[in-house]
Length: 327
Ligand code: AMP
Ligand code: TRP
Image (cartoon, rainbow, N blue to C red):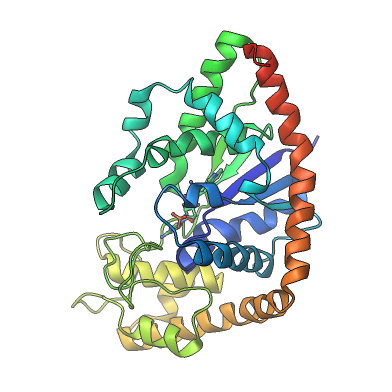
C-alpha cells in the first residue's frame, strides 16, 4: 500500500521562493512513491479579509504555479478546498473536539492576531481545526510542510487521538514531513525574519513570477554584514540565508560552495546567486505561462481533482458522522 501524502497552500499574496523551497518543491518527488493530494486552501485564506476578485485570480495562479513547479494533476489529486464541502463539515465537527486552550497556544495564531489591524475573526482562531480536517479526511500518512506548520500537524494528531480514544479507531495519525535543506528561507531585507507572503516591502521576498531583473535587483540589495568571509554560519543570518538559497537552487554541497566562494567578495556571491535563481525560475515561469494561457483547461483540471477527492473525503466524513450519532 502506498503511503498517502497531503499538503495545502493558501492562495494569498505572492508565492515566493520560501514557499517553493520550503514546501512546493518538496512535494514533487513525493508524487512517485506516494498517493498525493495537494490542495489550494481557499477556505483558510478567508480567515483574514480578502478581495473577491483577487482571491479568485489567486486560486488559479497558485494552481498554475503548482503544476508549473512539477505537481502532476493526473498522477496526484490537485484541487481547491472549497470545492469539496466535506472539509468544512469535518472542520466544524473537529471544532467541537478541540479544547479552546489548545488553539490559544498556537504560535501562528498569536503572531497573526497581533499583526492583524482588522478585527480578528473566529475563523483565524479555529484555523487549525480546518487544517486538521484537510489532513484527517484522507487518512494521510505524511504532511510535507515548513517548520512553522509543525505545531498544527501536532494538534491534528492530538485531536485525532482524542477522537479515537472516545469513539474507537477512526482517524489515522499523520506525521509532519520537513525538508532537510532550505526549510526556512529568511527575508532578504531582514534575514532575522522568515520570508513571508504578508510582508510587503519590495526587497523582502523573491516571488516565483518575478522578472530576472527584479530577482537580480532584490538579491543585490539583500542585507548582509560587515564581515568578509563567506561561509555557512547561523550567527550571520544575512550571508547564511544567501548561501542556503544558493545551496538549494544549485544542488551543490556546503563544502563545495564554501570552496567556490573562498576569498571572493559579497558582490560576487550575490551575482552568482542571482544567476542561479534566475535560471532555476525560468523553466518554471515558462511552464506557468503556457498552462495559464488556457484558463478553461486549468479549471477542468481542478474540477477533475475535486471529483477524485470528494468520494474519499465523503467516506471518512460519513464514518465520523455515524460514530458520533449525527443524521
Ligand atoms: P504560507 O506562505 O504561510 O501560506 O506558507 C505556505 C507553505 O510554505 C507552508 O508549508 C510554509 O511552511 C512554507 N513557507 C512559508 N514561508 C516559508 C519560508 N520563508 N521558508 C520556508 N518555507 C516557508
Ligand atoms: N496552514 C498551512 C499553511 O499556512 C496550509 C494548510 C492548510 C495545510 N491545510 C493544510 C498544510 C493541510 C498541510 C496540510 O501553510
